[in-house]
Length: 120
Image (cartoon, rainbow, N blue to C red; front, side):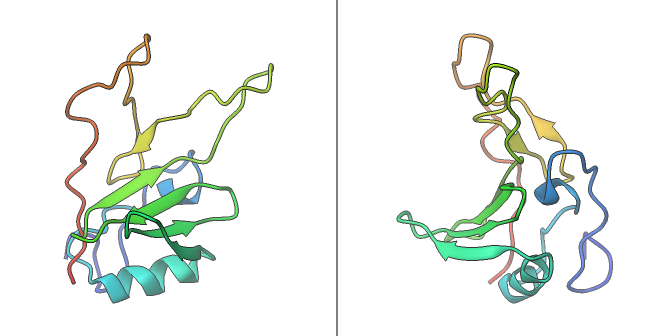
């Protein structure tokens, strides 16, 4: 088990919402992940794309794709002008922020998939 004891991931880096406070979910089962994320207070809903979305009170999110791939997004942050300043960013499997777009708004290759994946 990557995270430690069965059903509980390691500590994440934090600082970007609840979705950054826990470590790698790889090798946990979907049920273990579901129990863990619900235990953190996540609201769960299916998306149109067939993913399961876990949203926390701080609006950080964890998506689980049909194939088990995990996608994390940080809690939104806003600048003094009210615009969201971290839109489009993702979190790595340890909760660290990943820059997914360059200064011109173009996607940065290789940042979409972090390799974090749960088992069925």
